[in-house]
Image (tube, rainbow, N blue to C red; front, side, top):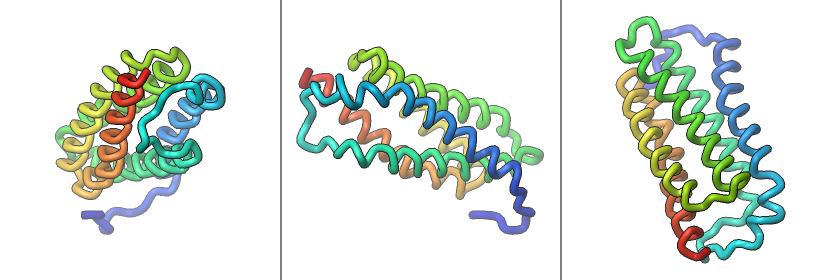
Length: 162
């Protein structure tokens, strides 16, 4: 699953971590003010997690995305669908960032609901493509898929309550 025959490359690994973590930090910029103000005024379902949980969960997921992308990057020379997988990877990162912008910065819950469904599809496609290149990379996406599935239900519930 995690092929240990290939040499670990520190600098590419760090770059692969920095890319999604930077997207997460930028998303955090869009959410910071609204979480303290607008978001507190919304009606939320009983299963809404406490605000302090979101940062650690998302940071972990972004790190996992970075590890998965590194595992796929290592196979870039032999994987026939590498360019497609890399393209979908970056599309889902942009979609991830856009959800924060749409939901928190623009405060457009309905539009954010549509966007997160598109994001979830992109994540699933990304996971499948990664799995075809490196099984471990694809499997690393399972927590991300589960969390964004939950976030989709949460977004839908907030939309319906407000």
